[in-house]
Length: 100
Image (cartoon, rainbow, N blue to C red; front, side, top):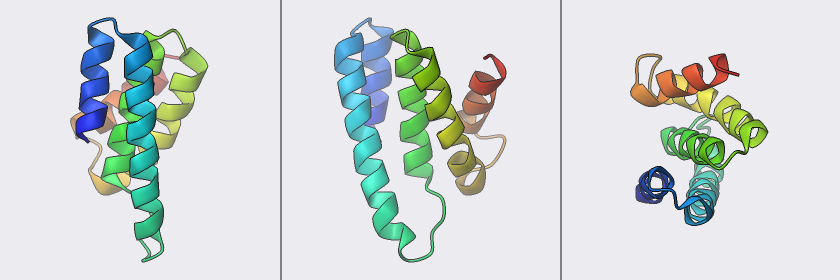
């Protein structure tokens, strides 16, 4: 998750190219971990949800609004199932989708 947090920081500092690269790496690693664990019947992953909402934030800051919407849509069920509706990341994904 450190890579996702670093990507958010880089994005906030205006380093969009680096932020996009780092958040793609975070999503890729989280997705690989989730797929490995999914084989043991885990349907959702907080790590993947957090990486995906970070990706949505970075994509939106980089002007990639459709990609950001898709990332937030994919993040939401992972966050709702593994955290809850009141978790900051879940609320962020919900707000992101409501703001379309």
